[in-house]
Length: 231
Image 1 (cartoon, rainbow, N blue to C red):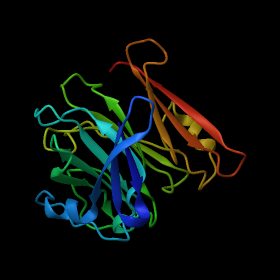
Image 2 (image 1 turned 120 degrees about the horizontal axis):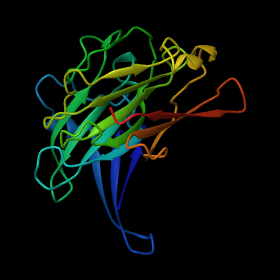
Image 3 (image 1 turned 90 degrees about the vertical axis):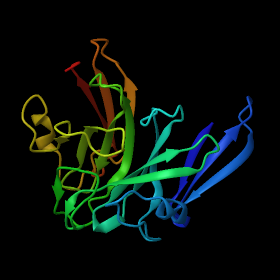
Image 4 (image 1 turned 180 degrees about the horizontal axis):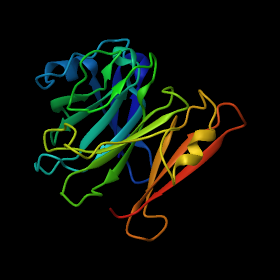
């Protein structure tokens, strides 16, 4: 099955597929559905937030009910962008929605995200990748891009069973990062690193994980591969 975002109408469509790839049924999750069940401290979704795009990622079951969760971008929310963790039921409705957003230009933030973003239009949540469980706590971890913050910024963090950011897990990667990531310092401003994010698993076969980020807005385009140690 598949999840497809349609930010122009603030909707995520859940597609149930036949074995040959044809669609047999569709369920829609609108911003009104999310607002009806949003967690305490999660500001409402508005029609201008870009909810549903340009990123949707499936997450492993966070709350132990046997049903997967969804991470959905809202890259125009609050002036800097946000994302939502949607807890689904077995009939594909949303039972709880937790917002994760940076503080700074957009306000006080949400979901215990520890970083502030001061760049208007940073587009946090424009890209999202599920990392699986990289810290061994039994819960999903995630990579989120903010491609218009500086030359582009990547955030990784663990999630709690409530869909908030797990304490002491968030990492920021950008042009100011030290070695061995210091090569990012050569990227031009607005190169849009992490406009897209993919998480192909343990490419280097060292027990760690890998993140692929698209960039190259000032060229014909390029791609960065980040290989991480198991720790």
